[in-house]
Length: 124
Image (cartoon, rainbow, N blue to C red):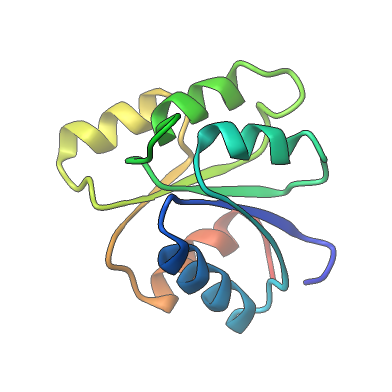
C-alpha cells in the first residue's frame, strides 16, 4: 500500500534491509529507516507514519526508551509500535508491553510472522 508509511528502527543496516524487503514483498512499499531512537524521533517529525517497527538493543537511544518517548508524545502516541528483537524472555516481553509496545516479534522471524503482525494494525 503506497499510502502506508512505516518507520523501521534498527542499528543493523542488514536487519533494516531485511525488514524493508520483507515489507515490500507483503505490499508495503513506503518505509523509512532509522538507526537508533534519536534518529527515529527526528524522522517521526516528518509525519505521516502509520506504524513503527523497532529493535530493542541499539546505541544512542535503545528501543524501550524510544517507545517511552513516542508514548509520551501527543503527536505520536497513537502510532502502533511492534518491537522486533532478540530479547525473548517473558520478563522483557512484559516490560516492553508495559511501556506501550503493541506487539512483539522475536528475531529471527519469518516473512509470514512479520506480515501477520503488521496486518493486525494495517491491512495491505
